[in-house]
Image (cartoon, rainbow, N blue to C red; front, side):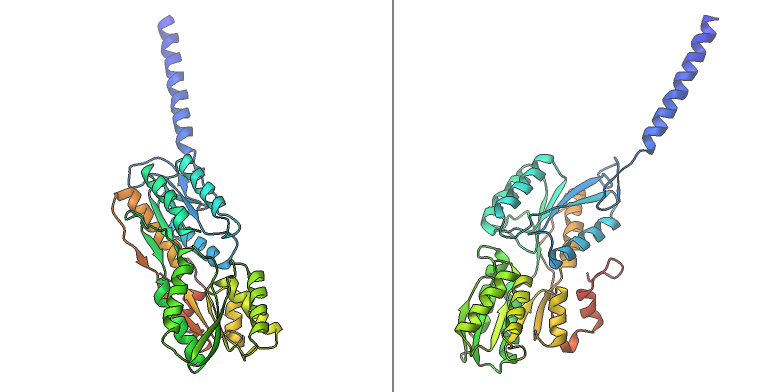
Length: 343
């Protein structure tokens, strides 16, 4: 009798154990960002959490980077992203603290855009020392570690072209102004270098004002208004990023100078694209933020899962004017989607 009872208890325990194991196997932790299940596996399919950090959240440009990273995550197995950032590109300390938190949490990889090239260099080193792979999107560091690839625009060459576009529109003569955005940001400094190099080719064009927008459309509006008051005979403006372009265009419009002051801008927020359509903006240097997010995420996953090295990538630009706005290739960059990614 005791032997039968023991056998029965043993059978019941096995049944319970099977149920428990089966139940545990059915549980999945779902990441709200990518929707991919987080579960164990070998090195090639191990669940990964990648921190993706823009210079700042909220702008159209960085949201397109987000879309690109999300798209890449959706096509990879067991990869989720955590998108987080400061609210202003001037908040260097805030970004440093955020990235330090991700290092402490032990995320599998960090994919970020540096708000300040020199300050953030130490963060890349800190992360890689902790065996956390790092890639940079859009903006790198100084120095740029050899094991941290950069996915970005060739800002110098593109800004030289911006000077060419301005010169063409002004028949290579006239007074112009320049609106950079944040001193110390690698992208800002590279664009300034390229624009000044380009402008030097045109001796009859005079740079009469340089004012930083602080990556704030309201600041750009104010400084552009001041420039227009101080130089009523100005004929052209180059604004080196999205907030600067939007603020400058509003200032020119308010001064009643639309069509009289040529604006060459950077990026492709909806208001900027509308400005090209209406003639308020002559041309835009349009980067490929979707490709930056998409390719950088794919590459950091490759680095983690295969241990392979990844090189820097020039993600390219499109020079958008009213004449080519409706071209399919231009539209793919202006209106990117995961179904038809511009990559």
